[in-house]
Image 1 (cartoon, rainbow, N blue to C red):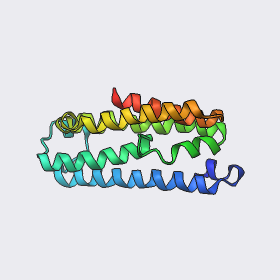
Image 2: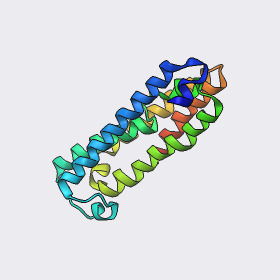
Image 3: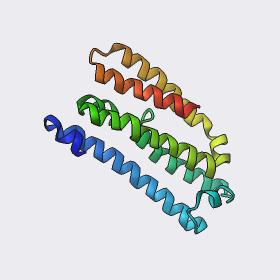
Length: 166
């Protein structure tokens, strides 16, 4: 927030970035607390062998998917990404694309696929749909951009969509 917000007084963009990522973090925290209340553990290897009921798996998948999609900038949860990339200094933009977005994608691998493999298999169409829309949407908008940093922002959406689709 400080790197983006203090650069050329872009407090509106920094605030949007902070609110979206804070909300995503709170949703993830709620999901982790829900997991802890169900199982009593937060160890990933222990949770991988735990059997969640269908109702619990749907709730957990929804909570974790929304939180991770906000953090990774997956379509349609990417509302903070284009402005943050465009108006942030280059160093902050590199931190966004190199750290924040990839950590969100890593969360998809560790949290969703390891803990909820049945739910991921059953509801993979949601991930495929969001990812396919993100690739098309990001590609079209990246092609139309005149500003290079804005083009990088939309190609980041495409990149994240391809990662999550994989």
